[in-house]
Length: 446
Image (cartoon, rainbow, N blue to C red; front, side, top):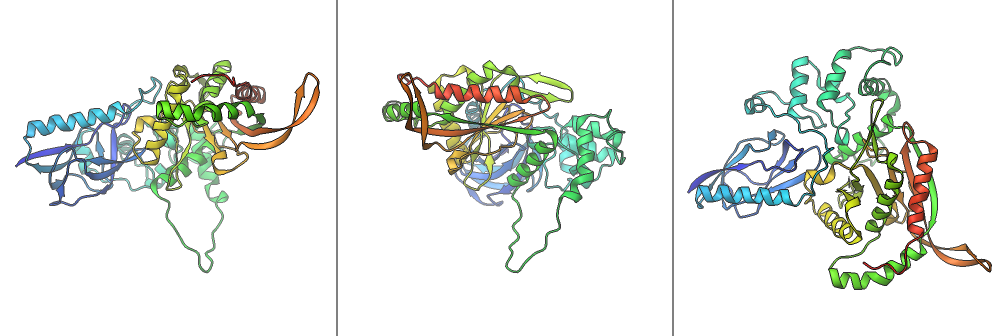
C-alpha cells in the first residue's frame, strides 16, 4: 500500500483558498474512485471534492471550518496504486476541472496573497458567519480588531467580501465614532461602514415569537446573499425604469426553429441566449452601462461578461457568468447558457464561473411574474429583469390604419446606479434593448 496526499485542488485563477465545511468520510473509511470525500466552500461557490483514486482515508489534516490554501494536502490516503501514478492521476483531474471554466477576465480581482502553512494551523480562527481570507484575518488579529468589529466592515469584494483594502481603509478610523461630515475625506468603504454601525440596530425591528413559530437558521449561501443585497442597497442609489415590449416576432421565430435546432444540435433553444445577445448589442451602443465605480473613479469595462441569475433547488440564488459574450454568436451563447445553467442546478460550477460579471440579467418571468425591481449585483451598476411573456390585445399600426391584434407582450425592468447612470442613459439603454427584441428577424437562421 502507498500513502499519498489528497491536495486541495485549484478551483479558479483568482481562488487561493477554501474552507472545509463538511467531511463526507471518516478516518478508516474506504474510498472509491471519484467518490465525494469532502465539501468545501470559497467566497464564490460551494462544491464537493471527489477522490481521484481508491483507498482508505487514514488521516484528516484539517477539521471542518478550517481554511486551506490551494495546493496544500488536506488528507492522507492509503492506496494500492503506485504513488507516482496516483500523483499524475490527481494532477490530471485537477487540470480537467480547470478546463471546464471559461477563460477569466483580465479585470477579475487579484488573488489573495497566501500565508505560511504554519499560520493557518496554529492561529486561533475568527468565528464569524462571514468568510474572511487568511490575510484579512491576520491583519485583524495584529491590529486587535474584534470579531464584531470585523463583521461590521462593509466589504467591496465579490458578494460583499472584505478585501485587504477594505480593512486597511478601516484602520485609521478604528474605534472612532464620527459624523458623516467629519468622515467626508475617508474612503467610501469607511463611510458606508460607519453608516451601517449607526443604522443597524435602528432599522432592525424587535421580533416577538408567537405560538407555533419555527426558527430556521440561514444556511451559508443565504447569509452571503443577504449581506450582498444589503450592501448593494447601501452603496448604490437604485432607480428602475420600465418598458413594455412587443416580442411577437421573436416568439414566433423561436417556435419555428426550436424543434429543428434541438434535433440538429442536441441543445434546447431558450429565451436567455436571445436576451443576452440583445443585451450585448445594447451595451455596445451604450458602453457607460458596462462600468464599475471605485470611489470617484469610473472603471469602463472592456470585456462584456453577462451574469445570468439562476434559482437553485434549495431556493438560493447563484449568478453564473457568460464570459466575453460579445465574442459569441447565438449558437455559442445557447451552448454556454445551457451548460452553465445545468451545472448551476447540480452544484458543478467552479468559482471562476460566477465572478467577473460586468452586467446581469434576471428572468422573473420564469416564476410567472410580470415584472420586478432587481437589486444591482455589485460592483456592477445595472441589472435587467425580464418578465413573463403574455398574450394581450394591442394596437397595431399599419399603412391602412390602426387595428387591434393579439400580441406577445412582456415588461422589461432596468435598475441602475444613479451615482453614474442618469435617467436618460438608463432609459435609452432599456429602450434600445427592447428595440432589438422587437425588431427580430423572422427569417433568421441559426
